[in-house]
Length: 155
Image 1 (cartoon, one colour):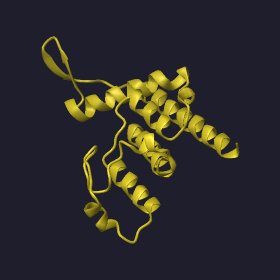
Image 2: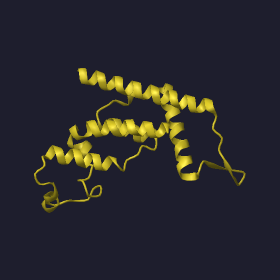
Image 3: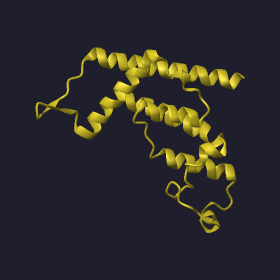
Image 4: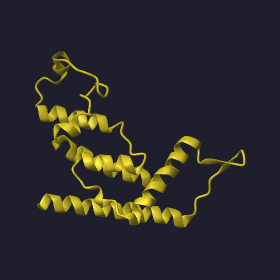
């Protein structure tokens, strides 16, 4: 659930800021209803007739984010770059914890939280203090991110 909360924070940030980004950050976002990097024609725009360009961009970003995820710190950093936030918000204090949490989420989602030990599948253990460290890391990252956003809005 911590990873889901972190993803929701990043997805919400992108939904807010990405429609306002420049062309290079939007070039990977497909037109709503299209696949990434799929070309579209004026005929494809007919479905958007009557909407402003800003509305089409916002809806296309939103539709694309419905399928998005952030599987590792690199993808989180890429999301920050897309919306103009420095990766400096990733303090060494919590960057490693977020990476570990993301790896564990991958193990849970794709391997049913099982490890192979001496050729045998075993359920991985998870200690309470590890979860508490991850919780703290998500909280610290969220706080650092919101502080950075607040400072950029004031500038």
